[in-house]
Length: 157
Image (cartoon, rainbow, N blue to C red; front, side, top):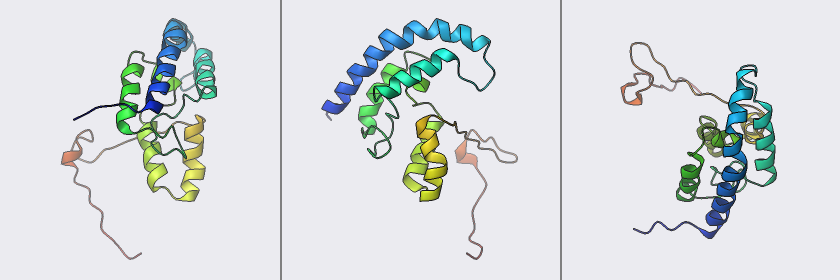
């Protein structure tokens, strides 16, 4: 099996690596300091600046394979970028590629109604809001989906 990365992904990879080395990694200490005095849920100023720079360079929403919403890369191409982003705890957030927002955005992009996309997907992809994921059930661990007991039954419309 051949694991060739597309030319588009190679170009983005070079940009991501350069941005990581020149901007993100040197800012990690500043981020840690600013985060100590930043209100919970509010990004430190350095994160706001890094995100604005990444967005202006088009290094944003790299996880979405649909060019309408993201970079249009395959999962394989994106996996190479994730390997680089994994070098920094703050890099996924800088590039707007952080969990759980990535998975939630993918689901809304693929299955959401136009109204849901307008209300939730667009602000999520703009970095204006964050999302969450919660999975729990009585008497079983929500972290193990193989043990879920909930079921859906059609009831009328």
